[in-house]
Image (cartoon, rainbow, N blue to C red; front, top):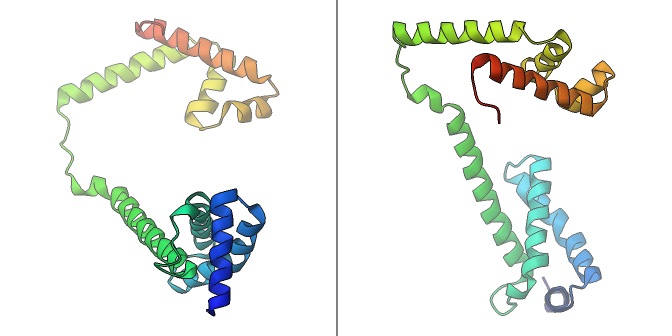
Length: 186
């Protein structure tokens, strides 16, 4: 990078830091974002992940431009160091998530005793009996929400009911379940 270009970038960063100059930031973004993304992709990141990380780096530039010191390093060195550190952090988080996904394999589950199995079966029978007491129009909505995983908006759309009706019927169903199971209302 020639000295004139280095000075130009330093002045743009100063304009971002001092005046929140959007035009200066846009020029910096247009110059560095593609270079950062290419560098990250060459180091094994997927294109969309690299793009997201570049957005993060450029956000750092916008919010922390005042921390850049042109006497310490060039702007490209500063930005690529931020990108490198963010990439390392992202890899650590991804590795941690992969480890968490297998965490249950680390523990042996105890086989529940007969008394626990019996209690669970009794509780399941009480829940089934309580569910049989709920009116069908409420039960249908509870099934959709909790067994099929549909949102209230999806249920409203698929049944043609107003969203408020869906919500109130589900709430009424749960109030009936609480009463049938002997639990206090909330």
